[in-house]
Length: 107
Image (cartoon, rainbow, N blue to C red):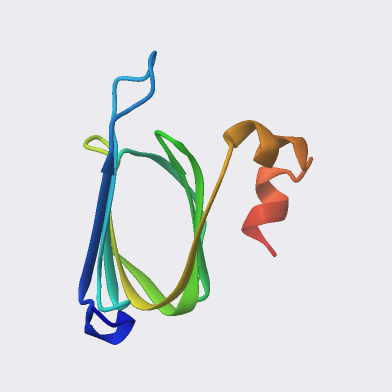
C-alpha cells in the first residue's frame, strides 16, 4: 500500500508499569488528530502544540493548528489543522532543558 493511500493511522500502546493510563493517537489524513492519555497541555499556537502524555512529552507541529476539544479530566484532546510532525520525548529530558513555563509560553 502506497503512503498516499493511507488515510488513518492508529497506535495504541499500553501504559508502562506504574502508570495507570494508556496513550492512543489517531490521525486522519494529516488534518485531524485525536489523543487520549493526555496529562496536560503545556502550550499551543497555530504552528505547535506541546502536550504531556502518559508516555512522555509530545510536540505536534504544523500549520493552522486548532485545539477543537480538550477534556483533561478524561485525558482527551482533538486537534485540527495541517499536521507536519509528531515528536515524542521523555519528560525528564524536556525538563532538563531549563526552559521555564513562561519561556515556553511566550516563544
